[in-house]
Length: 81
Image 1 (cartoon, rainbow, N blue to C red):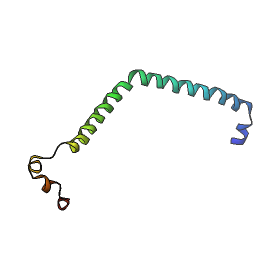
Image 2 (cartoon, rainbow, N blue to C red):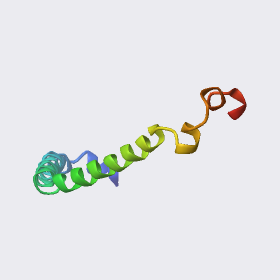
Image 3 (tube, one colour):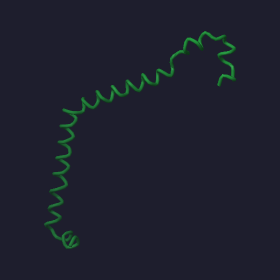
Image 4 (cartoon, rainbow, N blue to C red):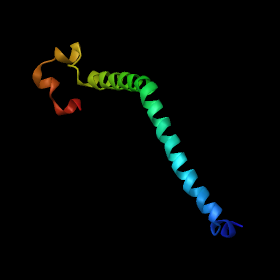
């Protein structure tokens, strides 16, 4: 059945109408999404990125008080690892 449709000029004409219309609708949908909804998703993304950066920075903070008060040779000793 598909081979008989592929050979018909009506099917070829339908394809030449359906593909551009689908592309046009997709383009219009993208423009609407960018203009109305993208800022909402960007703000959520930047908030999430900010939270992740704070999480990473928590590992970069200075040593806790008890380790900072140790003598330098004890704090850097390989046995501590």
